[in-house]
Structure formats: C-alpha cells, structure tokens
Image (cartoon, rainbow, N blue to C red; front, top):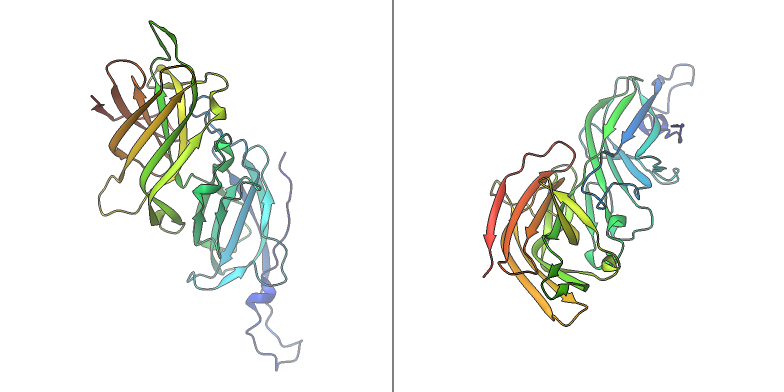
Length: 316
C-alpha cells in the first residue's frame, strides 16, 4: 500500500520576490495546491536472475522553475529531498503554486550503493570503481524528467527508466567431452564508456578510455538466463552509460576474459562495435568456451516484448 511520504513547501520561496512594502491585508498571496506524484519503476520480469529493480529503495527528486534555471527544491534548510521506494513504487506529495509551471527530475537507486554523485540532478556522475564484483544488481538505477508540470492539484504518474545499457555475456555450453567447465571469475573491459549522465537529454558525457569490471562470486553456482527463447549460462553482466554520439546507434568495443577454476587456463574474446542503447540490454551469446567461438549479439528492449535484431560475430 502506498502512503503519503512528505510535503515540500514551495510557496514561500516563490513569493519571496513579492513586495514587502504592502500591508499584509493588501498582499497578494498565491494559492498553493497539493500535487501527488506516483513514482513507478517498471517491475516486469527481465532476464532471469538479472535486474528486477528489487534493490532500488530510494528516489531523489528536484523541483525547478519553468525555465530550468533555478532550483526551487531542495533549498537551504529544507527537508531532505528523497522518499523511500517499496515494491518499485513511491508516492510524493508536493505543494505547488496553482497555475505555475515547473520542471521536475527524479533519480531512483539503492541508497547504499555509493557509486553515484551529483551537484544537482541535471547531471549524475558514475564511479564504476565503486561497483562491487558480486553485487551488480545494487547498482541498477532509474530516472525521469517531467517538464511543464502545472500546479493544478491533479495526481500525476511518473514512470522511471534505466539510464544504462545492460551488457550480458552468456555461454551456450559449460561442458566439454573432457567434463564440465568451472569458472572462478572474469574481467570485462569496455572502451569509451560515459561517466556522466545528463538527465534532460538522456545522453552520456565524459567518456573513459577503458573501464574494467570484475566478477568473482557470481560463479558460486551456475545461473542461466533465457535469450531469444534459448537458455544460456550467465557469465557476466554490467551496466554502462551510453556515450553521446553523432551516429544513430552508438557502439563500444568489449573484451571479456574468463578464468577457469579447472586446468583449462583462461579464454579471451575481443568483440568490436557492440551496439548499446539506453534502457536496453545487449546480450552477447554463443560458444564462448567451446569450439567454434561463434557469438551472436542480440539487443533487447528493457521492458516490452522484444524486437530482436541479431548481429553475428565470428572469433577465430
């Protein structure tokens, strides 16, 4: 059940510029009106075992003026601008001045992840070095921007989406004629990944030349995911900010190195020009560890029945 999470009083800030010379009986007082925002984080099942938004537990929000120049809330001395998320939903009540227009920014995440920072929510910085190896789902995040919101007292629904592309490596087989393949860990290196997300445009900025992600504890047990109606063994998953680009379909170069717990050593795949898109997942699937080394790249929309363009890549 949703409940009222708090009030944000903006009327006094909006009226601060009015004349102080008038008698109080003559002052024009703007009428404030309570507006309830129902925040929704899509909770439809995604890839099995990977990212169901269940660890997202707080939503931060800011209120800006109609020109997106002055932040009206939070302001010095105000209450903290966040609300708890439960069951992929939150409810926020804000007192707006009737008839005025506003812009709002929302950012939802796990409160303790420590990987995101901002001066204001126009730009959110991502520190990939804070991503712990065995807790990738903790770093899932969601955002929304609402422009030209009128203070009219009518309830409003805010639907949040991922700022990231999710990239998965998936193996068709984890066994050979010599026996099962047991993994002890892997590293994934991605080129030109953005480190700042601009919420108003949905674009990434400040690319890092190379970002390396590591995974170890994910291989305690074999996990499977379903991609394009086929079952694969999940090897690695990472969240990436899509770099801004003049091309229609941004891409990155990806290198994955898997370490075997048995005597097979390591295996490395270099996969160039991997397409990534905000709020989509890119699945690199195929014979990662067995003979043939044929990989397919399948790009799935995040929350709707997927339309699956496929690119075949052969690594010999």
